[in-house]
Image (cartoon, rainbow, N blue to C red; front, side, top):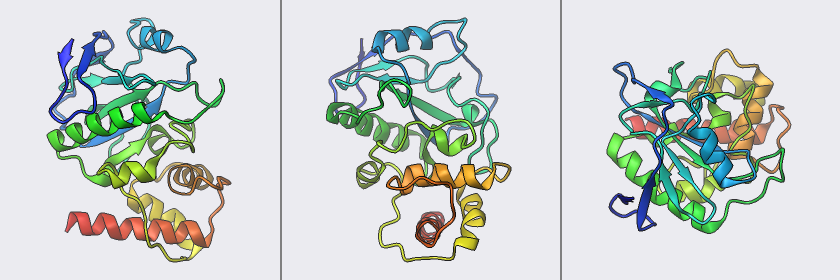
Length: 237
């Protein structure tokens, strides 16, 4: 058992080393990626993340009761993101910390993320963000970096309260915008310039406008994206 980082919302972090990692290749951490496991049982998910034949892992796993398991040292490159892009990085694994949340996902009865799980994520996430000076706009979901192939952590994930707790951005006070500008603004925010527009828009909606995910540009989404760009610019200035 590891002592939890200072201020973490749990008492301890368990350690279960995964063999599925390699070097960061000289890259510094600047991104936090949140996933769901897409598996029914926590133990099965942990076993897969530690199975050398699966060739997948994450730095941390959080069970629904809030218990945290450390799998890969933060200094190493865990294999959680796969092919993707965020904010200029193609090898997202090399620059990110990955956290897997136990949730059955869309194929097995996708449900809400329990309060103890989110409390533990906030505690752990804030420690990680502080430790690596991760900008708020680089706290993302798996679907944000791989919009054409991933949908986790999904539309039930509580991004807004997470941002209110210091993890990520949320476009409060957004006005309506021009739908024709949306695709360009998403690329400026961090989304893959090579991703199909509808896939990038759907990923954006899943994160910032989960009430309607249709992959279509509209004035509401354009306004949200414009507001996020302002927040990002303010953070960078």
